[in-house]
Image (cartoon, rainbow, N blue to C red):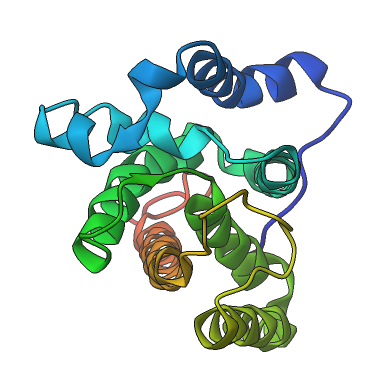
Length: 206
C-alpha cells in the first residue's frame, strides 16, 4: 500500500485531477449563503451543504492552511485516480453529519480540516512504510492538544467566537484508517487473484 506522488510532467492529468477541488472551492466562495453548512440550512433540507460547507473558511489563515494541506495531500494521492475523489465525496457528508451529532449546539461549521485529516492519514499510511506510526502519533498529539486547550496549532486565529472542533479531526483519523484498511484489503485480494489466474505464456498441459 505505497503512495507515490503524481508525475508532474503530465500537467493535463494533474490539472484535471485537481479540477473538482477548484470548482467546489470557487462555488463556495462565490455563493457562501448557498454553500454554508449551518443549522438552518440543514433544518430546511439543504443537504448539499454537507459537501459545500467544508470549502468555506472563517479567516484567511484558516483558508490558506486548509487548502495548502488539501492540495499537497491530493498531489501525493493522485496516482490513485478518481477512486481518491470517491472517498472524498463519501467522507465529506459523513464528517458533516458526525460533527452535527457531536456538536448539536453548533450553528455553523466551516473548514477542510476534517477531510484534510482523512487525506493525511492515507498519505502517512502509504508513504512512510514501517515509520507510519511517527506522523500518526503526531496527529494524535495534535488532536489531544486541541481537546485540552481548545486552541489550534496550525491554522491560527479562526475569528471572533469561533473555536476548534477536534471531534471532526478524530472522525477524520478513523475514517482515514478505514480507507487504508479497505485499500489494503483490495490490494491483497487483487494479488491473490493474480496468483489464481494461469499465465497465458505457459501452455496448458494435454
